Length: 422
Image (cartoon, rainbow, N blue to C red; front, side, top):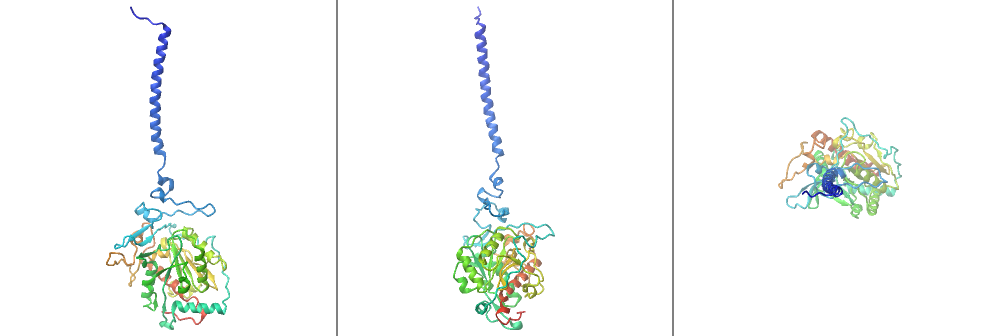
């Protein structure tokens, strides 16, 4: 006899069975949704590089500028395109001394924006003023100081084609930033790069009538007393990064300019509104705050052009990546006290020319390039433009004109001007 259950009990058993199947199905679906959702979330979250916009680990991200300053374009170091990964504080391109790997030789961090073909950037930005600087009166006391400084710089030049000049060039070592971005340093000594290459050619071209001591280019701390005892004819400042001078550095530079010195700034990032460009203009306004706060472009009839050492250089040559901005200056006593070139000639001068005017790819006994930074030369026509023999020679001859002007700019004001050394 079949066991018959009441209809009510049967219905309850059927309902429970369906509920159990539904519960199991629900749990399984929830597990699947969680797993699939996790996969989707994992794939949607961007990698650190996507978040920071940099090449390399997230530690390479550049901190945004303060909100009270204009936005800065982000620099992508050239080494990131070649060998991603070093920490942010490391120099961008380092070729070490084989005998001492801890000593960096060539140091470079390049950001090379490309102008449109055949089009140069605007000559004068809103940050510059075309209003001429005021001419300060030169008192007899100031004239005596300038004359003494002139003798320290150049000795007593001869006359006519026998005129001779001798000086030592200095690169300013300032707080922060990368003051040595265009030179090679071996065991604490500058032995190659921008100024050594420029000064070598000056000595060669003038048959040593201009003795540049190109093997003894020195770094000088801007906060040291040496700045006012040595009184360099000019101080070369360069870099790629933001920097801020200390109060001692500002005071030293101000005193140095008042005795006839000159600061020559050359941005190691071509064009305007790079980190160095903004920092250099800002800090120089601190230095000359009591004289003139405006940079002005030098006119075409300025003595740097009209009385040029190499008279065939009639205009500003194109710098790295074909930038051709004017030379800007601040004046003191009517003469250039701060000169600024924003076309990055310093990096062009990291590719040396030999005595015959050919690109110098010679090496020393240790296998190092004597006069050329391969990290720049090997990237010509890839990330860097305007590195060829003719462009380099034009930039070197222009640089020689700048140096000679900085050596002789006071002569007409402090005594009889020496004739050209050529």
